[in-house]
Length: 453
Image (cartoon, rainbow, N blue to C red; front, top):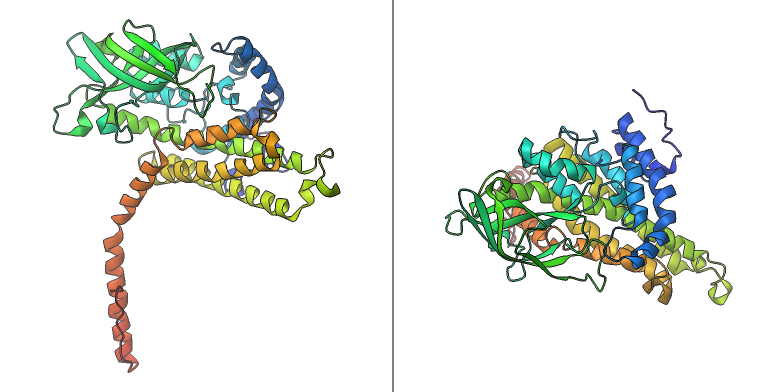
C-alpha cells in the first residue's frame, strides 16, 4: 500500500540521500513523517519546559515527558528501533529507523518520549533476542510498554573494561540462585524510581580455560537486598538527571537462577548482540544533535543585534567557510551511519561490525568538531546555558566512550586489516613478475626497488 506523503520538498526527508529514499517502504515514509512532526511540534518547543520541571524534581522524569510518552504510545510511535526480524517489532528496518532516529536526536530526550532511548534500545533488543517466553513476559513486555526503565551494567572501576574478559564481579551459581559480589559503574541511577532492573554481566566461571565462556548475563531487580548505589557519577560536570550514571556495590546480592539470560557462560554472545545496535543508535541520534548545532550556528550568523564592524557574522569569509565545512561534515557522517544501518540489514550485525566500528570511531569525533564550531560562533554565550550547545557537545564526547571506547574499535579494525596484508603482498609479487615479463618483451632492463616486492 503506497504512502500518501509527498517526499520531494518535504523537510522531513530533506537530508535523506536519494539512495536511501529509494529504499523506504510506505510504512517507513509514514513513520518518518510522524516522528518529524512529533519532534518539531511536541519536543523542540518544550525544551525549556523540560528544564524547568527537572529543577523542581531532579530525579523524577519530568511530567512533560510522561505525558508525551502516553500520547506517543497511543499514536503507535513506541519502540520503532526494534528491527523487523523480531516478532515484537513495529516493522522498520535498521536503515528506515536510522532516518527516524536522526530526527529524534534533535532533542536529547526526544527519543525517550518514543521509548527509543539508551539504554532501553539495546536492552529491549537483547531481551527480545535471547530471553525465554516467560522472561519476555516478565521483563521485555513491560519495558516495551514503558512501565519501567532498565540499566545495562558491565563496566567496573578496578578493571580494564575495554577488555571485557577482565570483567570480574563475582557470580556464584547454585542450583536455585546466583550470589553476586563486586562493584559496577555507569548503570542508570536508582534515584529515579522508574529504574527497576539491571542487566548485569559478571564472572561465573573464572577458571574456565576459554576466557570467552567465563561470564554470565542475568537480570537483577533494582530493589534486591545488598544492591547499594554509592553515588551518581557526573559526566563532564553534568549530573545527567533524571537518569544519571550510578556507581554500585553488590554485597551478597541473591537472585533466582532463572534470571540468567540464555545460560551460564554465554555473556559474550549476548554482549556482542547488544552492543552493536547500541553503538549505531547513539550515532544515529548524534547526527540529529549535530543538525541542531548547525541550525543554531545559522541562526547566529544573521542575528541583527550582533553585527561586528556593522556586518552580520555570516558575511565574514571565515564563517562562510566554517558553515560549509560543518554542512559537508554532517552529510558525510550521515552516509557513514546509513551505510552501517544498511549493512546490518543486509548482512547482519556480526558481518557489519566494520561498518558499525567505522560509525563509532568517525561520527562522534567529526561531529564534536561541528558542535565546537557552532559554540565558537556564539562566542562566550556558546559555553553557557543560553543554548543547548554545551550539552550537545558533552553528549558527543560521551559517545566516544559509550558502548566501548573508540580506540578499542580502531584497534579491532586495524587488526582485521592487517590480516589482509599477505594477500596484498602476493598480488604485488604478481605485479612484479608481470613487470619483468613485459621488460623482456620490450627489451628493457628491469629495475628493483627496496621495500617493494
